[in-house]
Each structure stands twice: as structure tokens, then as C-alpha cells.
Length: 189
Image (tube, rainbow, N blue to C red; front, side, top):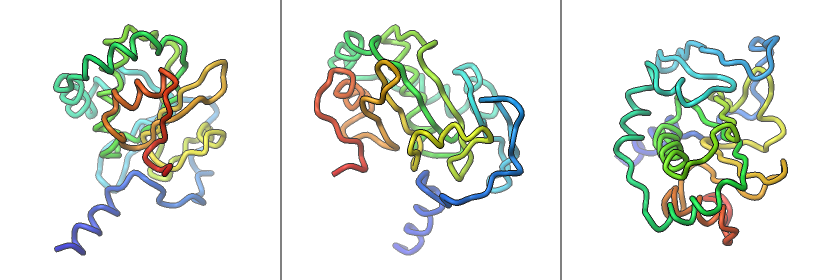
């Protein structure tokens, strides 16, 4: 049974699969283009490249996105801290629509940002394939290993990042980041 669980965890992980994957066949003429690519592994489409919230509210993503958004109730204390501080930040976010962790955390992020009154024009969302790449290689400058990865920036420079899953809760982790508290993502000891 434990071997089965280990194999299942490996298959469904949103971490690195192959850092040296070749993606030449996925080249695109447009920078940060929104593409839908058939994913043979689960026979579903993936968002690859830049996208917006409304793209996640459409089939086939709407089921998990809308449920995750509607059913999430962030902590009032964390939300107060976020509301008071998040407007100072730009956010670069990477996710995989195929990734269980992204499906769990991204709807929550959008709910947090909506409740905080965050200017979504300061949010850039990039969909990646299973190898964490895009045709435009947008991810290359961001040391991306796992998704979702939420990079919080001021004046174009990274301040901190949330990676894959929270230490406490996504809203508490974001509150720590935007208030300048000490915060290490789940992969920093």
C-alpha cells in the first residue's frame, strides 16, 4: 500500500519532472501567448502562457476553479494584513492547470486578491506545461522548479515567493510576505 501511495505521489507531484526537457517544437511567434495544448497524459487541455482569471472560469477549468474560489474563506486577521500591504506589490505567478497543488491554491489566491481589492493589472499569471516551461521561455528568468509559484515583487525586484503549498495557510503565508515578516517558502528550511 505504501509503495502505491509513493508512486501516486510521484505521478501527481507538481515538482520537477525533467529540467532538461526539449520544447523546441512548442516555439511561438507571440510573446506570452495563451495556448491550449492537448495533454495526452490526462486527456485534458492546459493553459500555456499568459492568461487571466476569466480563462480559469471557463470549461474545463471552471469546475475546480469556481468550487475552490467559492468554498474558500480566508482568515479575517490575515486578510486585514494583506489588505493593508498588498497594493505595494506586483505578483508574477506560475501554475499548471494539470497540477493538483495549483488547482488547490490558485482559486484561493484569486479570492484573497479580490477580497483585498488588489489591482489585478499588477498580477501576471503564466501557465506552464508539465516540464514547467512555456514556448516563450518566460519561466527561464525566475528559477522555477515547482508550481504554483507566486513571486512578490517591488520595483521589479523579487522580495519573496510562495512555492507549491503553504507553511501555515496561503493567506497567512501571503500576509507574512507582504507585511515584511520573516517567511521561508515550503522548500527553504
